[in-house]
Image (tube, rainbow, N blue to C red; front, side):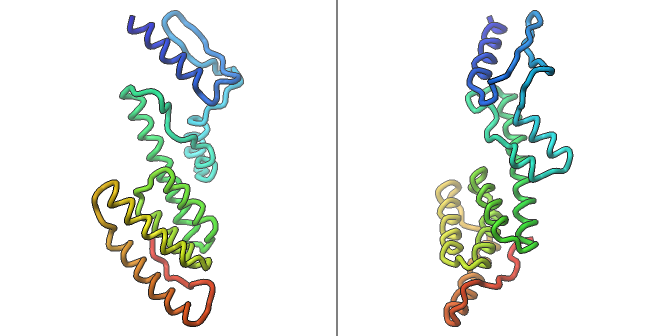
Length: 193
């Protein structure tokens, strides 16, 4: 009975997957597996292979979101958390690198992607604030801070870290000085290492 339910659950997971087309299942008695010679592309395999090769940008492109979101087995939850953590680490590396190199549009994109995966990632808010300010979007940078503090309060009942408040205060003081001179962009000091 348990084995039959397990096979049924796997069949349902396969049927609901985005990579079902071209998928060939191989049956061996009581075991169901993927045919490695079949025309299958699996985002998890592409993601982890790219990380193994050190190609962080490719890994992030291949990350498909939550792992088997309709399955609630312990192993699925653990694997999903592991993959999500790897994705957060990869996006953090890309955002910080782009920010440190002054590639503001990339830093903004990676920070926003990171916040879509983990909307409680405070360093991502700081990178986003800094890059937005440097490219001249002060109002969006300030809104980012308020979005951060509202999210932290709503989800965790806490305020922002001191580094986030410091980044906001620097942004406000630099913004005020630039508004007085009429400059569009802000030469922000780096807020995040």
